[in-house]
Length: 308
Image (cartoon, rainbow, N blue to C red):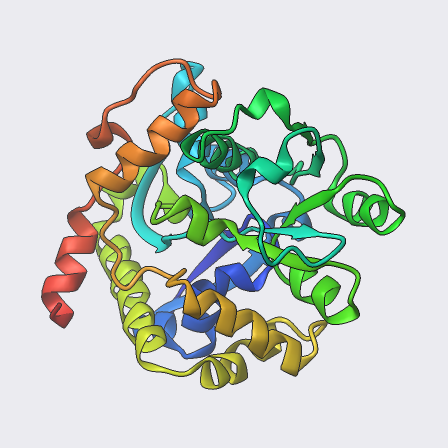
């Protein structure tokens, strides 16, 4: 039988999205007769939500934040059907070691945050408030795209830098920055990234949806059962620009903080926590029904088929 071709977008090219790269490399999608091509949004030439809504693709990785923002502005619904990353994938770096770091240390300082997506910034606001720090007392800059933000930090601008991998590990390896805190650990479990599609595709193609979600769950079980070294060997061809030893350190750090979901079920409590983060940060203005933006039908079917 001919495999069904599917292009699946990564919002950014990063090992944070290892579950997608691993699923393709291990042949789990192919085993479900799906010919999945993984493409970063920048290479595709269009961001994830527009690509979905314009019909260019059928499934993408993305943050629930995108769907909540779109719904908040009265836009079309984009539905999330399988959780992928259960932790914030960003890290807070400083120019010098801070072994006794406290969140109060950010008061009066400049944090160069990630400009390309708002969720890391929104999580930082919540973490500050949770630790008794008024975000208004911290200068958080989000104007510079990642390469320029890193260059500015290297050049002496700012006191702290918030970035994801592989930038974080590269800066640490060079001695250009020191890890202060994992934002994944500081934020706690949250459905940071999931697979999303349109309500129309969800209903029109139940067979493809189930096969795709089965492959997702099989990959999640594989990741949970293997070491960072083995995972690195599998995904290395997808990240040829990253030194293998560095890539293994990146994978190990993500594994250590339980970054990747162990099953595809995007739960109500995680959705609620993320929604509160975005409400408290002023990113969205009202609450949206879990049932409108999350579908667990295929996740439950896939889990029942393969066993929990």
